[in-house]
Image 1 (cartoon, helix red, strand yellow):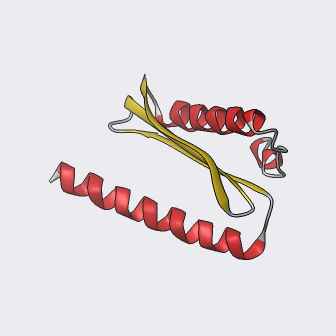
Image 2: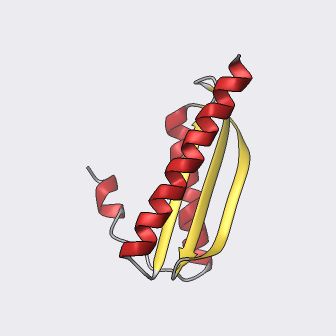
Length: 102
């Protein structure tokens, strides 16, 4: 049953990301980044993922295991990976960083 629940959560997450990407494509161009991190159970083994796009085309992506920790740590590690990708490709850091200060 646990495996079935994980797969259902994964499917919902992928559907959400797909929908978010479609909305983003319709409203913006330029550099766009997505990131997510989680662990199961919390705390437990962590996974992080990030996607960097330019003009609606994928430029760089990462998905990997990342040791043990909490959901919050996994989220920040995923953000750090995205920022490293942005720096590697000389992408501008976008307005969303303002939201991190809140």
